[in-house]
Amino acid sequence: QVHLVESGGGLVQPGGSLRLSCAASGSIFSINAMGWYRQAPGKERDLVAVISKGGNTNYADSVKSRFTISRDNAKNTVYLQMNSLKPEDTAVYYCNAAVVALPNCRYLEVWGQGTLVTVSS
Image 1 (cartoon, helix red, strand yellow):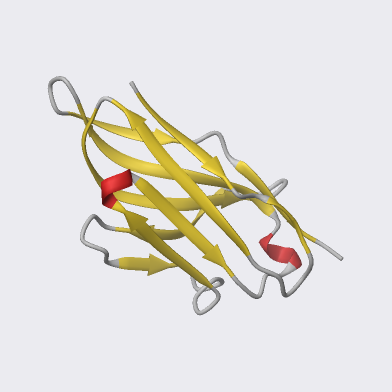
Image 2 (cartoon, rainbow, N blue to C red; image 1 turned 90 degrees about the horizontal axis):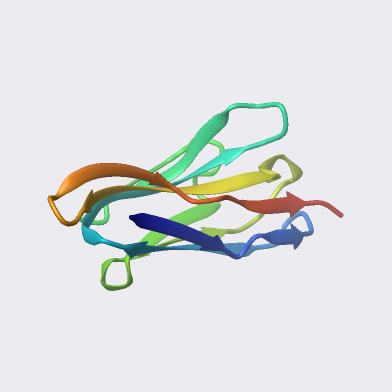
């Protein structure tokens, strides 16, 4: 099995910053793309940012220039640095990973449990 564990959420004032982390563990052969999604109350889960194994990134228009996704392949960990946070960034943030799992190199799409980010004064 493969697990993703997120951390770093919390309450922050508008204009503030937070850094989310997501560590993958378990029977991992390799990890391809890793990403962050978010789901606000009453809304669908949307892509925030994604990063390939080689470091290519893609962002939702709403977070470009404010959020930065990065990863440490040696630690099987992906990060999301969030700056200039706005109330509309309030959501549960979910980590996602495309994993090639052992023992037979099967492909898995794995989700974390989510971490709540609240932007409010």
